[in-house]
Image 1 (cartoon, helix red, strand yellow):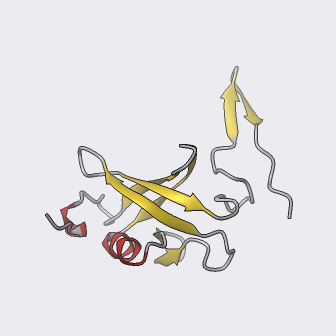
Image 2 (spheres, rainbow, N blue to C red):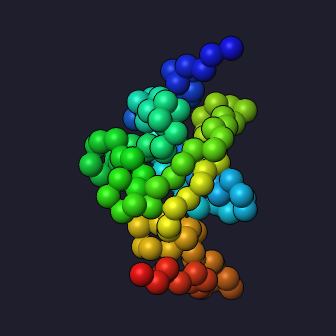
Amino acid sequence: MSFDPASLTYNDTSLIPAIAQDAATGEVLMMAWMNADAVAQTLKTGRVTYWSRSRSALWIKGETSGHVQKLIEFRVDCDRDCLLLKIEQTGPACHTNRRSCFYTVIEDGAEKVVMAPVAD
């Protein structure tokens, strides 16, 4: 059975959340948005492509930073309204130069940063 990106359930701005997870370790690295074109391009090229809401344009992860995401496995959730991308990450995933975007823990009502930026 062939896959059609139009079969996914997009929100009212034609986007779907995509969670990037390290395929080897299971670590959740980031969440970003995709539209149907980003989904199709990711599946075609194997390079993870997102939709940049701030630029209103496709964004190939690592295109300028070199922090590329290679698609290993593409999963769709049961409601078809969220994606899980198992990836191979080169360099940090977060624009703050951290391995993961999820580097802040809320503990006892306070924020605690638990991951330092990667050294250059």
